[in-house]
Length: 195
Length: 195
DNA sequence: GTCTATATTTCGATAGAC
DNA sequence: GTCTATCGAAATATAGAC
Image (tube, rainbow over all chains, first blue to last red):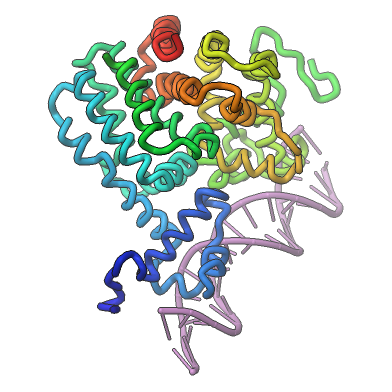
C-alpha cells in the first residue's frame, strides 16, 4: 500500500523504508554514537547500499533531525501547558508522573538523546533557531524562572534527574522490573522530593 | 622549572604544555563533542600547529584517555570501600555526600563525561579491559546486586541521578547559587530519598 | 528505489627540517 | 618542541545507469 512513498501501517506489520532506516539508525546511534556510525553501516544492516539512503534522506544530519522530531513531541504539550504560569512543586509532580509514563513507553528515544547530547546540540547551533523549543530548552527555562524559590527549583531538577536515573542509569539492571512497578516506585520518589 | 618535560607548578601559575593541551581539549570536547573537535582546532587555540600535539600525545584517543584518567579517581576509593560488602541505603547516602562535594569542585570533568558517553565507552571496548573499573561500571555493579532489595536499588539510582541533575541539568541557571548552599540542598534531597 | 562508480573533503597521523 | 609538507584512510555526498 504505497502512496507517494508513504506506506500505510497495517497492524504494525508494514513500515515505510524511511521508518526502517530511522529504526536501524537509532539502534546504532545508541550503541556506537552518532559520529562513529557510518551511513555504510546503516545501509548494510538494512540490506542495501549507502547511496540508497540518499533517496530517503538528504544527509546524515537529516536522519538525526528526523529522530529528533520523534523525540520532540514527548512532554512538549505538557511543558507548554505549564507554560507561562508560575511552576509550582505540585504541578511539577503531576508533570513528572506523565513524563515517567512516556519514558517507560519510549525508552530508546530518550536513551538516544542522553547518549548523543553533543550531536543534537550541534543541530540547534546550525539552525540559528533562536529559541529552540525542545524538551531540554523548556526545562532550562522553567528552572531559570526567578519567580520560583531557588530550593524549589533545585528540587524540580533533582526529581527530574531522579526518574531519568531510575530508568536509564542502571543500564539493563532494572529491565527485570515490570514497568508498572518501576513506575509506582518512581512516583514515590517524586512525591518524597516535591511534597 | 622544566624537569624531564614536567614543570613544577608554582602557585598555579605554571602549567605543563601537556596540561594546557588537556584543558583546551576538555573545553572543546564539552562544547562540540569529542568527534567533532579536530586536533587542528585544539592546536590553533593553543597557538601552535596540529603536528606539535603529537610530541605530547601519541594520538587523539590518547588525549581522551588522559582526560579519562583525571576523572577516573573521583569517587573510586569511595566506591571500592563500599566494595564487596552489601550496600545499604545509609552507606549510599554517605557515599553520595562525598560525591556531591567532588562534583561541585570538578564540574567540568563530570560534564565532559556526561556529554561524551559514547566516546568514553569506545575507549573501554578497545582495551579488552575485562572489567573496567571506572565510576560508571562500579555503579552498575552495585545497582545490579541482587542481595539488595529492588526498591532500595532504584532509590540509590534515583538519588544519584538527582544530584547529577541538581548540578548539571539546569546548565548555568544554578551557577548563582553558592556551592555550600547547593551542597546542603542536595544533601537534603539525598536524605529524603534514602532515609 | 536501489545500484555502481567516483568525486570531494576532512581528519588523523608521519617524516624530516630547524 | 614546534614547524612544513604530505600521506593514507574513511566518510559524506553526487552522478548516472538500471
